[in-house]
Length: 418
Image (tube, rainbow, N blue to C red; front, side, top):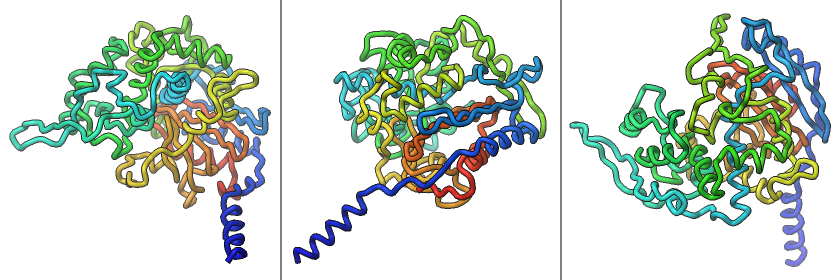
């Protein structure tokens, strides 16, 4: 029996021993060819890619134009709008306050933002238009806010489907003329779309995180992020648009389709139009260079440290990049997250938990974590390969196929992700 037990123990120990990473080297020529092809095939106006591996830059290339009308090339110094790649920065800022003991992950949200004490869940509507709501079975927790399981709405792009959407349209929580405090007060009036903790749904939760940073730190959100994240990391060219003194080098965003490139000048998506905004979003708004964002991503690869500068403790980064979604949350309850690959969600990051199941799935390594941004921006951290990749473009609509093909160029045909 003792021999059998020792054999079982050895088998379990072998299972617990991580497999060596698959041998891999980035092919810079293949990556550069992909970028050039993307421009020549009119998939993008301009694009760049940066690969950092084994503590050194391995590849950088750019192709196309940042401004077709002015004939300005897409280059290393091009300033891009990160959009939702702002979200991980906000999450890191909030977790610095967690490390200081300012909150617990399972605190009810209303302990820190009292306006959410009486939030209700939308249950439906009667045939005569009466809205049915009732209190949630449990409060929204700080953990829910970090992993998009709070139940918050995020607007409906002018096409409301239910009472929560219609109320969002009326209150406009993310209107640029609101402060973060006013945003939070408005969002708390919009009923939740589902019970907290039961579904993953992309939402304004990261803007709630920004308001939490203000309340917990006693400082304006942007000021805190500058002091605790951006400046220590040397991200000197990265700011929220309304706090930049100029927009030199800013790439245009293009709506691309059928060989046409429509510049998004004016409207909500032009950074220079945000100069007078009161709202500093946690979920969007940062603009900067790929080199700046690389410094942030390298800090994450370094488990909270970039050189001698430490932003978070290693255990905190590991916590953020662990899948926190309950297995009971089915694929149908994970919205479009399932299209990101085989994995789940941590605190403001997609987390890959299994190798790609089919050739149609985006390539990547088990244990990688990443997020992207609306104009087809993308970054990921691959600890298995000691690698960070930044992919920058300003192309609408969001192009997941472009990301799929780029990942093919980065990893090559033989890479399994194990």
